[in-house]
Length: 234
Image (cartoon, rainbow, N blue to C red; front, side):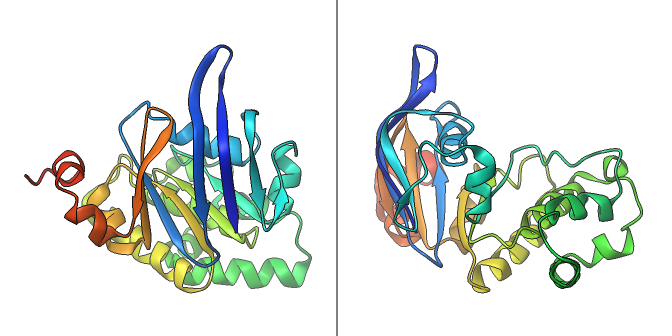
């Protein structure tokens, strides 16, 4: 579904991504892990058009999207749920979800809304509450729900567990697993390696702007050096 070939990008003269290659297949969940500063968020921003590529190519369903503006990339079916949740704080839960479904007709909107409410019932209970007054976990549910309102083919999640209590993280990842099982392709950037390993099909390790390892969770666990670095197991 998504193929990244020899991608290089950065900010000004600073090269953050250097000749990176990655492939995400339709229906799978790919998790990208790596240290802070590895270039993970920059990679996601390249995919959605917020950071231009200096060289290389990004193709989605066989067509290059490297030079497309962000809004056209979104219309192709790529939806990015950013780090830090970023709901519209002075808008209600319902209004936040409505912002994600602006391109839908009434029937489509209502169908997607009920789907989101089925995943996160608390959002239906609190649909009139201002998003900015909710807990961090509930705001993350709003952010994911808003992204799902677009009916994405590829859902990009950037650090959905950040700043959340472990019990909330488990709850959210249970829903992410359900989303994946519904057929949505997911590209996840996540620092919480333990929780990512439980739900992902493939793991990619990113360091210094490149992919240094790619494989399934079992292969990561078998690699002694990676196991020690990312799982704390010698």
